[in-house]
Image (spheres, rainbow over the protein chains, first blue to last red):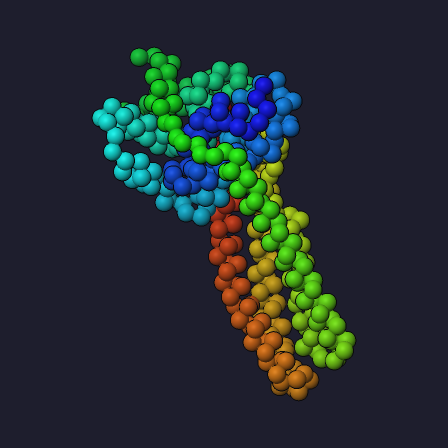
Length: 162
Length: 193
């Protein structure tokens, strides 16, 4: 099992960074949130080393930290989120294929951020290729509950993305 | 397209978002430094208020001036509020974030409530400080204290009280919003599935 924050980030860093993007639209605030997540994982390393499986607990920490971050951020600047990311990410010129992929990814991230919390959590974990079992463990819910939430979230995402 | 295909197709777009994660060790160290700074700031406030309280107790004892007596009381209350901040306001540690999401949200709500109560106490303190400034001005008029000491301290207190009240009222509005948001997220989390 990975034993240092560097090893953990090498394996799960991009996924954890995407969790930050699922909660925060503003790129600068995403960076702040990602830093908070890294710090929380670093502080929890001794407890994490006792776990049989790392991924569910890493993502549990990330989601738990993101929720409290979002509660603070939203109360500070409710309604402002949304525009910043698209402006900043759109400034960089890139080949057509990359642009289309970026556009799809941004569109998807915006849709995921609009999902209710309970659906957003299961969907982001599912999109990270986690099994129902791992998602259930990460969120402390049953596997059938995971299935119900994913189905409802899929319907909402379909409507948003159509 | 089945529902599963739909989500599985989205995985590619989702996972295509890759970002430069930067120097991880430096980012962790930066975060730890920030926490130490916050803690040092809160401890510093306790030390400053306690020191000022003792200083005015000493001045009151030596000179018997009621202006110093009032100042000692004002700093004593400020010190107690600073202790409240130090004891009750803290970020949750990483290991606490390993708890179930519902428990973490419950703790976040408790913390937001405490922060709100502390801000309400600080607003009340700002009013108390203004009352102290008025009492001190009365002492000056009644020649119960030296004019210079009394006026100097009462003007500083009045300015501090008004500035503090406005500052803490703004922070209280933010804290109100945070508490509402945590409750809404908690209801959101509980209400589904």
